[in-house]
Each structure stands twice: as C-alpha cells, then as structure tokens.
Image (tube, rainbow, N blue to C red; front, top):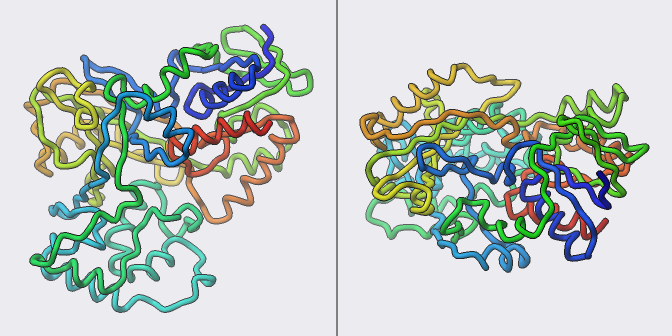
Length: 426
C-alpha cells in the first residue's frame, strides 16, 4: 500500500488533518487502530443507549469549527452545571454561589477568601499555591484540592499552573460576599462559555460525520512499527504502507517508543503521564429531568469525579421515555484504580442513590469500560520533558498533533484545529 500522506489516528485531529489534505487536493489515508473512527470523541451503544466516551460539548470558538460543526442539526445548551459536596447541591462554580451552602460553611469560605496570602504571581510555584492565593487555604483544600485528586489523580502541589487559563473563575471578595446571601439576585453564569452545542443525532462525533464520509479511513489498522528512514508503516494486521509524509495523533510516549532507542528520550517519554478513565454508563427505563447536562462531585468516598447525561444532551441518545447518565472515574500511575469493575459499578450505583440522582430499580442498561489516555497531567516541569520528545519526533520527520500528539490540554474544537493546522502548515 502507498499513500502520499499517512495520518495515524481517526480522532478529531486525524479527521481534521485528512480534511485539510483534501482541501489541498492531496492523497491522504487515515489509519485507525480500532474498528470505528472518532477517538476520544467516539461513542458506543449498550441496549439501544448511546454513550460518548466521556462528556463532550462544543464551544465552537474557531471560525472553521463553527462553519463545519454548526452546519449539522444541533442543540444549543446553556453551560449551567452543578456541584455535589458533602450532601449539598451547589450551582457551579462553588466560589460564586455560596448561598446554597450551610451558614457555617459560608463563614469558613468567606474567612478563607479574606485571609488569602498576598504574594506576587511570579513567586507561585505550583497549583496548590495558586489556589491558596486565589481562594484561601480552606477553600483551596476543601473544594478544588479534593477535586484535583479525583480528576487529575494527583495532589495540587504536584501540578503547574500552565493549564489553568480561564478554566477557574476568580471572583472578587465583593462577589463572594454578595452571592453568599440567599435573598440577593441570582448571579450571572460565569462559566468560561455561555452556550455549548451538541448534535441532534448520532452522538458527539456526528459533528464531523460528513467530513468522514469524504475521507479514506482504514479502521482496524493498528500501527506496530514506524520505519522513518524508509518511510514505511507496519500494522498489526500484517499490512504495510509506504508514505511520503506522516502526521500522527498517537500519544507522544507511544510514538517515541516506536521511533527511537535513545535512553534519554525514552526516559523523557516515560515521564509524560496522563490520567486514565473508567466509564460507568447507565441507562434508565424511565425519563429523569436531570437539572443540568453535567455536574461535579467532590466527595472522595464517591469514586466518580464528573457525571453527565447523554440523554439530556440529545434525546436521540436513549430509547423513548428513557434517560441515561455516564460516570467518570479517573486514575493514574501515581493514584491507581483501587476497585474491580464490579466494585466500581456497585459503588457508583450506591452513590447514585445516596445523591438522590436515580434508583437501582430503574437501571435498564449498564456498562463499564476504560479509556487509557484521558487527560494530560501537567506535572511541574512537564513542558521541558515534553519538548525533548517533540524535538525527537520532529527530527524523524513526523508532524504530531491532537491532544496527545501535542501533549496538551486541548478541547475537541482545539484538537480539530490542531490536526487541520498540522496539515495546512506542513
């Protein structure tokens, strides 16, 4: 087999690279290891319930993404979400909605804000310090600190702050105080985007279905070796492909292990760590009116960190008069998963009832599966290590893109643009 441009991975980045190649009238072949395209934005079905691989909603900030995604029939959803902490449901973000907490807890949080350390931003060395400067120690430990262990599977002190961006809202003390009174006006939604979009049919990946129909995508082609000197890919099914140009969305550590024997580079690649995710997907035989599309869970005796409702995002994701939820449980090399699949399911259903979300008796479909690469962990010093691997990849003539190809915190829109620009700028 021969192709001008070989693209490894048919997630959103690989699909976008193929789309960009087609715009340039270039021959491109996209190779996907699994039996279906979509990558982390793909989906699966269990007893007529469709589940994405974790929560996905599009912000559509890049103009190209708006043009392509919004050409598909879609729903517009508010970015409202909720938090569950210590038996209380609180509007997101907690720091701007204290009115829903008990009085004594509000007092502790307000005192935490008042007693925030006054230090120069330039002296902050890790995420824990950043949290304490923004919110005070009590709030930092009680809310984002706990969530960090659940979502990032590490301590906040181990992370840098380069990933934060506008993801965590930083209110003034005046906002905190005003929004602590139950009779004050409801604060505006301060989430980093106000509207999120989701396809009406086919799950999240349907945003790019028309693009996929025009591409040459070979599913079941897992790359097992890359000969960059002779520009040949070898696949697990025994086939080979000679290419002229190679674009990869493969996770950087995996890619490094295929192209080099240099111990320094392999050690750097081994230090690039990501969380993995256990997905507990639940379909219900009745229709629930979940208050928001997704919510966050802080309690550490509850295994899942985040929950979302595929059926609320689109009724097409569930049979008529049914509903669904998906529970995300994260783990890492540092904090490995403690439970078997059966134990995870049991603990999830137990917590589901404890939180008043749904009953076991209403469960009609149940599934547990794992996603090996969920989120890049921004350990302190990660960027320097990442650059060592990136240079080696570039030296071998490979263009690497996408969330795990760039090894960055990219949303699906950004991953799409990463693949598109990788091809466009090659």
